[in-house]
Image (tube, rainbow, N blue to C red; front, side, top):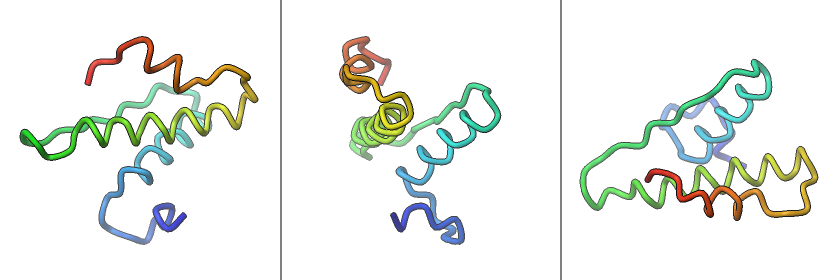
Length: 79
């Protein structure tokens, strides 16, 4: 939960994902998270963390019985 501390100046992957989700719900506009870096810097792992946060938030909101995370991962998103 410490990642929600907006007073912290360092970006945190969970905090960024959580903020994107909040903005999506509040403003009903598409959001984009750009994850970049050099080879081996953790882009793929960061993408997985973002998907975990977004799908967990979506499941909590919708009460979906099928895992949203499984559905997203099955679509083979661009990593």
